[in-house]
Length: 85
Image (cartoon, rainbow, N blue to C red; front, side, top):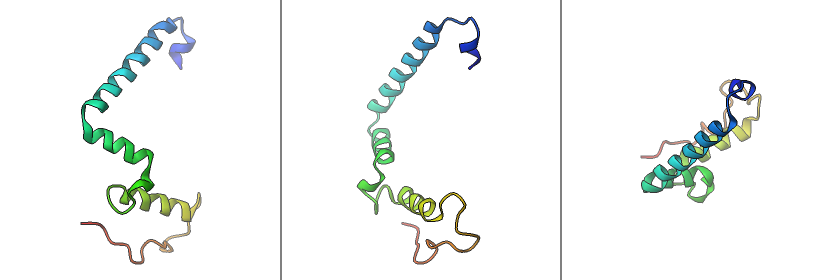
C-alpha cells in the first residue's frame, strides 16, 4: 500500500507481479503433484473419501458450526469420525 502512495513507479510493481505469476505457474506446471494439490483445493468434492478427505471434513465442521460455532464439546463430527490410514 505504501508503494502505491509513494512516488514509486507503478510499472515496477506490475512487472514484479507479472514475473511472480509467471514463476508461480511455471513451478506448478513443472511438478505434477503440486498441480494435483492445487486442483484438489479448487474442487474438494471431486474425491471426498480419498485425497480431499480432510478438506471436506473441515468444510463440514465450519459449515455446521457457522461463525459462532456450536459450543465446546458439541461437535457432530466427533461421532464416527476416524482418521484415514
